[in-house]
Structures are given as C-alpha cells and as structure tokens.
Length: 328
Ligand code: NAI
Image 1 (tube, helix red, strand yellow):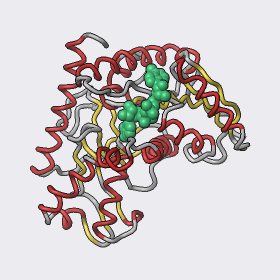
Image 2 (image 1 turned 90 degrees about the vertical axis):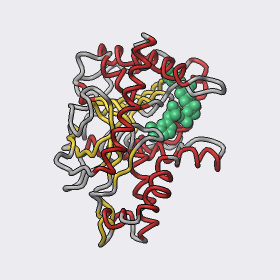
Image 3 (image 1 turned 135 degrees about the vertical axis):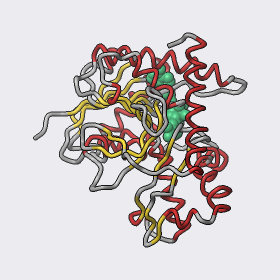
Image 4 (image 1 turned 135 degrees about the horizontal axis):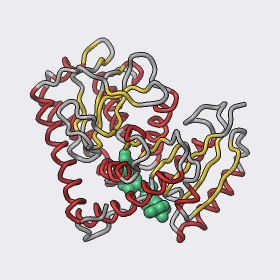
C-alpha cells in the first residue's frame, strides 16, 4: 500500500470544511487506494466543533483514513503537509469595507504562507478557497519564498463547473459532452467564463456565443453571480458545491487532467495572455499530476480580451490595496 498523504484543512469546522472532509476521507479526492491523514485546523473557538467532526469521521470507519488530528496552531497543523486546503478565512460582516476584508485576510494568509514555508513537505501543494481567494493565494505565495510559486493555487473550479452546468442546460447535452470551457480572472463577479474554445455536444461554444444576448445577459452573469443567487435562495453560501469544486481541483492537480481536456484554476501568472507576472489569475490549465500547465496559444478575441482585462484590473487593485495597507 502507498504511504499516507497528509491533508490539512483550515476552517475545517466551517460549512465547506464539513462538506469536504468526509469525501476527502472516503477517497474522492486522491483515490480509493490512497491512505490519508487528515489534519483539521480551526480557531480556538471552533475546536469543539472540530472534535465533533473527528468523532463523526471515526464513525464512518473509512478504510483509507489513517488518522484525524485537530489543531489550533498552524505550525503543528502544517508540519509535513502534502496538500493544504486553505478554506478558513475571515468572512465579510455587515458594514465591513472591502479594504478591511482584504486586510484581515492578508494577515491570515501571510502568516500561513510563512509557516508553510518553514514546515510543509517538499512537495506541498496549496489550494486557497477562502475569499478573496486569488489575492489570499498571492499573499501566501509571496510569504513562502522557498516554495515554488507554482505550488500555490486558488479555487475557480466551482465557477468552471457552474459554467458547464449552465451550458449543459442551455444546449440540452450531458455535462460529459462539454469541454474546453475556461474561467479567466478573479473568483469574483468580474470573472469571465469563456466558451469560445468550447465543444458543447456536436456544436461549438463559438456557435452558441453567436446569440450575444444570451451570452451577455444570461450566461455570463448567471455564472458570475451564481454565488449570490445561492445565498439568496438558501440563506447561506455555497458549501457542498464549493467542497466538490475543491475536491475536483485537487484531484486533477494530483492525479492529472484526462487526455487533452482542460480545466480552470487560479495560479501565479508567469506573464502570459496579457496577465502581469505574479498575479494569481484563473487560466485554462492542464495537470500532468505534478504541476499545472497553462494551455497556451488560444486565440483571444476582442470580446474576451475586454472581459479578461477587466477582471485582471480588479486583481491588480486588490494587491495594490493590500500593499497600501502594509499587512503582507
Ligand atoms: P464558514 O464561516 O462556515 O467557515 C469558516 C471556518 O473557518 C470557521 O469555522 C472559522 O472558525 C474558520 N477560520 C477562520 N479563520 C481561520 C484561521 N485563520 N485559521 C483556521 N480556521 C479559520 O465559511 P465557509 O462557508 O466554509 O466558507 C469558507 C470560505 O470559502 C469563505 O471565505 C468563503 O467566502 C469561501 N468560498 C470560496 C469559494 C470559491 O469558489 N473560491 C466558494 C464558496 C466560498
């Protein structure tokens, strides 16, 4: 049998954590033949809840779950970690300014990046889910100078899956018949779901995009504002679907994307597609089971260019706001 992999989940007692942990422990993320040690990192106030989750994990009697360990100390929780799922973040509360949210989270992710730099396993891969996810990942990466920037990523897979679901409904084809969708930019309302390179059953995304009214007034805003629509309907933010996206993301990263197909992930830009180097931006990506590789050579039309640029401008303004506050 394989040696166990250490998976540390921050914000483990939150709603996404609760939805993710059982599937990770059951092998949905790294495979049913991969033993897993789960580390749950929480704030002191939520350690009791984490202990309850650990009891429930025990009660699943899962064959590949080697151990569950609970921490309120990041240094212990990240010691030797192979996959860090950074889900815990400071939520935006009523009356809180955007700059305050950026600042509070920049402090958390700067500290966690520095600790990962010191104690994580040599092959650590970091997936940031907590918002603002792209900028949090950028801050963590720059506070971890000994970890290659390519090991940091932020989650846009939920947005990617949302785009596929919308296309499936529009075209009346199964999700398995859809390929070549890309989320560009920030995990925010400025994100750009690009279907110009997609295959949708026996049609192309470009053909569907000829209906510009549907594309501009329906598809793009439905995908980009899906999170708000879920909050309005459910009274709580996306949790199971966010957990599912996280699991899909890590699975593709660690086990590789199948064939020629690609997915979307926010990674540190090497300065391609007009995205300045160092920004954590969502791109079309493949994985060989070790690293994300950006799908190169896609033609970007004017329609797409303007939308990618707008989201990239937002990413630049987030980093500038953090830098102006001097928190990270
Ligand atoms: P939640 O509020 O239910 O849980 C967050 C948990 O994180 C809480 O238990 C809290 O105690 C813990 N926490 C906060 N700061 C921490 C720290 N410094 N270290 C360890 N634990 C810490 O929130 P939920 O619904 O689970 O969402 C988590 C994050 O994921 C939020 O920032 C949310 O905006 C984001 N999100 C991201 C998505 C994406 O696609 N990238 C999609 C949906 C949510």
